Picture: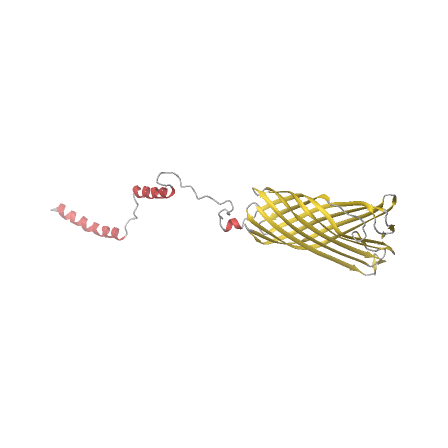
Length: 335
């Protein structure tokens, strides 16, 4: 009887504890069989029924690779490249003049006066670029060409203090050099098209020399140079990944004038005579570039450069004007 009483009391004491456990059940841990089933399902989605990996779809070589998101687009990519090409140049529409004191100064037109036939000359042209990301780049270029001819002048002309007579042999030499440096902003640059706006400067050097080979003392030589601010625009189309069609144009003008001035410097009066200088430069470039593995390639195109420099002071005055143009072809490397 006592055992029955003790058993009833124990059951009464444990009943509230059991109800409390029912109100707050323990978290359920799935058995290992369910975990294995989920793992098998994920593996089945990656493999076909035969157990072989499912090959990814073929990638079109002309299609951009999948983007990794905004982080890939914002990544800063640096690229350095250069070009060297043969430039088959012609110099046309040449006009020069030189005045020493009150002597000379008349314009000498090579074509109209039959002074020289400047034949095509082979020369080299170079260009380099440094891309900082997709939208900013630094670009520069250099080219130098010499032109020469020896013929009888069809009409007499005066250059500087020397007069060259009609039917007299005249040896003519012209050296034309230019160097460029620009910052290029590319508001549009993607797989298919690139649009760039350039701001920079061009240094132009022009040397003219006339010599009478029968009288070497009859020689006149003059140089003209200028630093011209430039602005330009370029467009490139990429119909296929290795092919690029491009067109670029730049133009610039510089003008300076100073009147006669008398000023005091270091306690002494100094006179600066009147001086004026004006320069204009223009460039047009059209071509095709084909790259292999986006590292090395070939380039070919047509280029035109216009130069005009004029300076004047009391003791002398100089003027040169001409257009150099021709075809070029070369190699490109970038990394």
